[in-house]
Amino acid sequence: MVVAAVACAWAWQLQQQLVSAQSSLEDYAGRIADLEARLSDTDEGMNENAAVQAAKIRELDSEVRKLWDNVWKQTKERLATLEVASKSQAGKVAANEKTVGALQAKVSGAESDLKKLNSVAGDLSRLAASAKTNQAEVERVADALNRLELDLAKLNRQVESNAEGIKSTDAFRRQVNSSINNIEASIRALQAQPSL
Image 1 (spheres, rainbow, N blue to C red):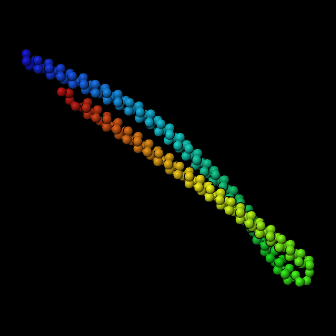
Image 2 (image 1 turned 135 degrees about the vertical axis):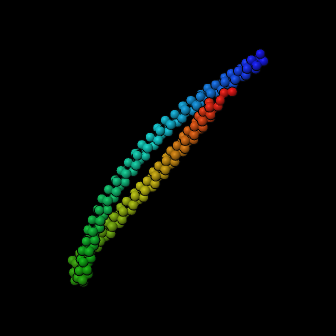
Image 3 (image 1 turned 90 degrees about the vertical axis):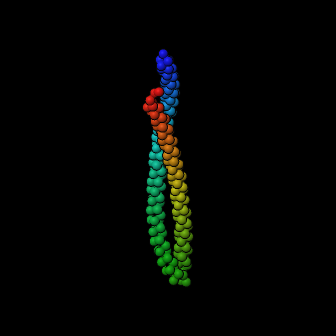
């Protein structure tokens, strides 16, 4: 009779422990489901953000390439024009120098030669003004290239910042996954323990 009473008490105690363990398991299952839902939302948000950032990066890269190609094309055309103008002006300057030399030899003899010399001096003034204009154009092109380099540097910094944000989000996701794995391991360990 005493053995039966002790057995009943022991069975009742085991039943209470089983109920308590089941309650704990249900609580853990609820927490895991909540964490999985949060992780799923986080993964979806991160995937959307990553896709948006990648699209923005591709768009920025395309725009930078278009701008660079456009500037390079315009610069190349301007430089070619300036080179042609420079050669032409060099030819004109050489011709004018010959004319000036000839006029200086004849300057003592004739007024007509003096007029030619004045004409040549006017051409030289126009050439000097044209050279100044060309120099200003080259400086404007150089300023435009400097601005483009600054814009490109800004875009590079923005791309690096976006990459760091993605790395940070990925590290957070790995940390959450690790926490979930630890919780699951704890649950498996609890389930594997023999009932008393």
